[in-house]
Length: 399
Image 1 (cartoon, rainbow, N blue to C red):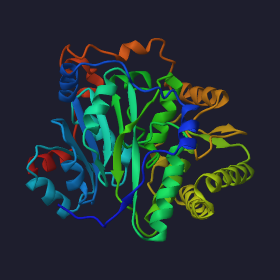
Image 2 (cartoon, rainbow, N blue to C red; image 1 turned 45 degrees about the vertical axis):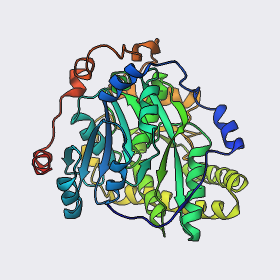
Image 3 (cartoon, rainbow, N blue to C red; image 1 turned 135 degrees about the vertical axis):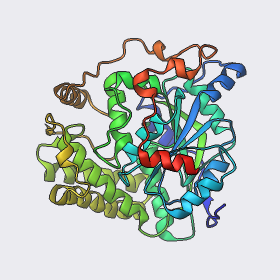
């Protein structure tokens, strides 16, 4: 078991943030009564999926899972220390592996393919669940197709650590989204959002693109603020590296048309940055806004890096239909909420790529009888049959 530095954590969203949240996504609390017998069956049909590379904090993450759910580790370039930890871990683990190191979308897809459980709870290796959170999220997903919990960001005594926590709060505190973790969803939604869980091309923005398709299908994200996970404190400039990678993902997503591209990119980005930084300064203070400005620079540098160098060598794998979806008013980086015009433009882009994502007429199709058949009979065969790589099969045998 690894140890982490002493940290402090902040409480739930402040009142202004909650007020803003209440005005955005379809975020009514999942209050439909569900009896405990149904919850137990739901837990038996749930898998916690964690993408993992070299983070030994996975031991703390697994220890915080306080229900008898399947635990799926989707490895992408694991170290020997991680493999040793997995092999010696006392709890049963389902292990799969991809060869595309750093591809979170592909890792989550491999994790989803490695299990036949109906409810998938996405988690990060550097986070831990508060007691009872897994059960509360399973209870909610029995009546709602997608449920999002709350991240409580840890912080140490360092200035950058505190500023990182403030900026992360700002990035998630103003709107409800399907950004993970913690996110749980009924995998039957996949057939309504293009037929795939996550886009394996874009790297690092896989949950943002997932959220856009949910909106195209009219599938709401229910916010469960009491479902808390605790994010370990971040130190130094690690967060800046994350934003650089997000920028790379943004560049790929724009080229393939799953994100919109500003018709006048420089002017739009300046306008968006000024507005976002002013908003951040009001909500979190001038110091957080100044740090966020550096993160914005890292983000746009990542996008430029992809345009010039294609670091993940994805252009050769673009589909023939890949092209930019240009708009004068593009999607802000600090939001996933799409306007009507943006919804129409992305819907058209998916249609042109052969994916017709229509609005779901009746959301009750996701409220399956929790006392009914097991997940293996409830999940479409197209998404339930595990197809691990040869490397993944070897790791499974080792674990």
